[in-house]
Image (cartoon, rainbow, N blue to C red):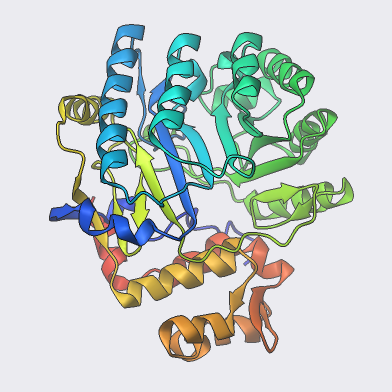
Length: 423
């Protein structure tokens, strides 16, 4: 397994939105009561980018002018108003995330407006709320960072990917190492509670020496977290069209990254997330997310929904235009309604890959069965040394964490697998 790249795909949510399908005009008002008394997240999707990265298969559009961005935020406000009016009065959000795209590509006045509409239409746990913003080096300015501090942003995540010019070029990224370092200097001066740096390994032309240098440069800025990803080459992306293949060196590179970051005092909470602060990890569970904007996914209990999936620019632009013309935001027309079987799979995937592990008693309480009887893969993984079992939990071993992107896809149901292949 170690001689070749064992990684299959990044399991960041289940089911993947490529498995979503046309829904029969489901009324969200029938689901909003499920937000009461629960942990709820609010997500704002800003789909605009300066350019499309070579590996990006996310919903984003390039080349949009300020007027178009302003009209998009008009649509976001219409959506926020409709949802806010329909929510039960006791619904509170514990965290707010601005993702994309590149949120900081918005002019400062429009960025401020997005913060204002979030505060105007939704209620938060004021003192405890987490506010997260994603950024890119070219869009990180002192003026916009000052606004983020003013708005109590406590976590900022910057996509650097590499500190080597040739590797940035290979990824079809258009910032420079110098611009990344300047952006990180500005972020450090602002002293956010948590700074995260994203890096990629398995880049064409990357060596252990260049990977080590990128890690060294990232650590100079003393980030609280690093997210480190293997390069995946997805259909319809620039790298895919260039015939780039997955690196066979990805697995030994991951092993090196883990060793290097652990030596530097970072704890691996998952295959990707390395953090300085040792905590108990995510509780996962069945938290809900409401997404505002085009391209963000919403989760309410067993209902998952979003705009249709697209990567190619012309398709993304069509979907964006349809969103901006939309008048009714209270019906889900594209998504996935999870059966109990799919909810079980989501529970297992989230807890074993990203959380504290599977709480055996909690699984029994939720689903009425023993988790290992339901998922014999866990028994096989235990025999192989990928998981360890105690009286209370089933968790990944260090080797299991390293192979998360090999193990996780084995839990995808046949129905979801078939739907993903249809796209």
